[in-house]
Length: 442
Image (cartoon, rainbow, N blue to C red):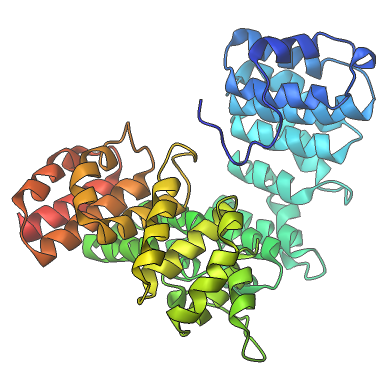
């Protein structure tokens, strides 16, 4: 099993997790082990795993460590698609802990709960300002219960409510009743100083199902993974606008992700130092990263490399920084031979088994290594185009972009022949791209 950089908990075998949950919490050396066990059991699907987690939910203890573990158990059961857990999960809608209520509501959404009584309970919880109303609204909306429309409409009109609640309500009106008149009001939050507000607004516009929102979403200063999801989700809803050339251009631009094409409200008041700009590539706020990258593209490459070397080891541990450094290396010219050798090492690392398949830097790593080492494209193209060996569709799409660039420079029949399997790729966008290349160059 490939280790995820997002899994920061100590490793735990299946038998160890079961043993922990079979031990009274008073006998554990570390009470948080319950949470750790519930987390790791998501990696071991099966009836016995489900039974153990359901048993944890039946634990009546009010100890905080148990309650926190129960939150994770609810989440894990939803990930495991354990529909038979719906009744026990539903009891947590009656909990005094709003976090347990939130987890229960979101889990019931994931499990496509159709229990009328539980849906009515979720709707009634909207009256309680102490509850996480956004989660409740999202769950009710996804489950298609229009009985909540009157309450949700009141929230959509209330400018005093938190943006996350009001935005979810505006989105819900679009989904449940086709009311789209307020969606554009959420655009301003796509450039909010608070990244959480940006994410909420993005998700609300995406969840609205309104194809007309796609353009503004694709320019939002948030992770490219979110924007790729937007085009996956909304393009199908706008099938009447099915212009494949436009679609391919949109995806190409998303994979390239030029920071100069991103809408940024953030500005520097004074000319920032190069060292500051490099440090901003490590920010957890993507608006800061994109602004720094955009600014760095106007600086001298010779001046940047020593500063990059100073943070090189740090970058290897930061997947966000890896993404933006690779973008800088790809979009900026003038790197020395010595620096290119180190850049190649970083690219090999980013494409290695050290990372999950779905990391956002994999597609651009394929583009850059194919430019720096064209022979590597020939060597790896079969692997990169294989859904089993390269599950992330955007990475396979990027491999096709690299092949297209090669064919545009010089006809290469041994490269063109590798397109055949992509014409039957399970992902629509990859198939469209392969067919487009075939028509142009083969």
